[in-house]
Structures are given as structure tokens and as C-alpha cells.
Amino acid sequence: MSTMETTDKINTESKKYHFILPNLFTALNMGCGFFAVVLAIKGEYYKACFLVGVGALFDLFDGRVARWTGTQSTFGEQFDSLSDLISFGLAPSMIFYLKFLKNTGRAGIVFAFLYMLCGAFRLARFNANISKTSSDFFQGLPIPGAALGMISFILLSTETGIFHFKGFYLFYVLFYAFLMVSTIPFMSFKNSSMVFRHKKKILLLSIVVLASIIIYEEIILFSLISLYVLASIGYFLMHRKKFKEGLIGMDDDDIL
Image 1 (cartoon, rainbow, N blue to C red):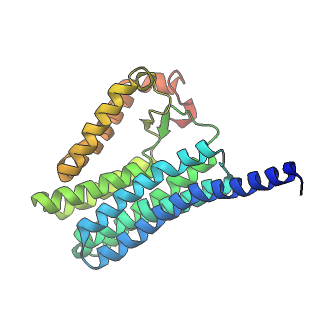
Image 2 (cartoon, rainbow, N blue to C red):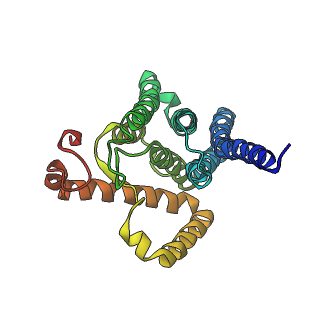
Image 3 (spheres, rainbow, N blue to C red):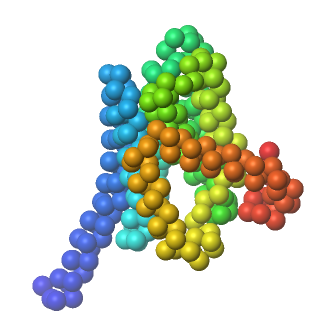
């Protein structure tokens, strides 16, 4: 076997391993979602929420690893969506149902299912419009963001003992279900000029936020996702006309 043939064989084998790596992160994300449901059934809600959070970290890295290794593929995109539906659709809805909605009768079952259904719709819409939407904004709240909204509320309520109202629980899950299927634009930060101009400050801030979440996860995580959601809704309402005219990131047909 010639040196060139040997090199080609090594490169081929290397590409195979590169292809496996991002899908391994995706599989780990799916595993976190599955075991989160198992823990929720056992009544271990804190651990279940923690696993959903870990799954979000794996989800954050699988796409980046695919881009770094040049192994983006249609298979990877579909596998990632299926994984997200389990980890950020099924798992949060089951944890929320078992923690808060078991005693609300059929309404609790329906509302928990609606959350998962809207998550599936959000993922399908994203895959269908992936080449059409602006990279500056997400069309509707991404399903990992909705999942963090759900588990952060569970953590806050579990640790502080507040919000003991069945009606509020139903409203909360429906609110995040609506955000996913809405066309409200949520900042993606992918091509944010501010992030590129202040990389070091953003990195330092990220470290501080991560440390804060580790220490006060039940308060900080809920505060951050709530701030992101409310700020995005407020920004949309203030600039609705510009969004409708297509001056900011989205087409006229995409606006509610």
C-alpha cells in the first residue's frame, strides 16, 4: 500500500470518528432527558431538573462540535431534534406534571401534553425554515429555553415553597407552550456585534453567571430565563413595526 493510500485511509477513518463525536453529545443529551423522566417518576425532582440542565449543556456543544469538525449533516440535525424533543419536550412536561399537575385532573394532563406538542411543533418549524429565518433572532422561544423556564420554576418552588396555586401552574406551562409556537423574535446572540466587540468581558460575565447558578441555582436560573423572555417580548412590542416591515431580522409574513 502506497503512502498516499495509507494517508487517505487514515483521513477516512478520522472523518468517521469526527462524525461520531457530535452525535455522541446528542445521544448524551437524549440520555439526560430519559433518566430525568425516570427520576421524576421516583419523586426526585431536583435531580431530574439537574439532568435536564446537563442535557442543555450537551445540546449547546453538539452543534458547535459538528461545525468545528466539519461534520454537519442532515442526519445530525434530525437526530438533534429528536433528542431535544425528549430532553426539552417530554422530560420537562413530565417533571412539571408529576410535581404540580397530578391533582388538577384532566386539565393537568392536557396542559402538560400541550407543552410537549408545542415543543414538537417548534422543532419541526425550525427544521422546515432553517434556511429562511434570520440568524439574529429565533422565531419563537427555542425549546431548550422553554425547558429551562420550566425546570427553573420547579427548582424555585421546591427550594422556596412559593407559588402554591394550581391555576398559576396551568397558566405557567401554557405560557411557555405559547412562546414556543409564537413568532415572537428572541435574540440568538449568534452574530451579535456586541458579543464580538467585548469577548473578554462576555467570557468573564459568563463565568460569574455560571458560578452564581452553581451557588444559587434556584434563584439565578429562574431570574435569567425570566429576564430573557420578558426582555424579548418587550423589545418585540417596542419594535413591532420595524419587524413587520422587515427592517429587523424577520419577514412580514412571520409576524403575529
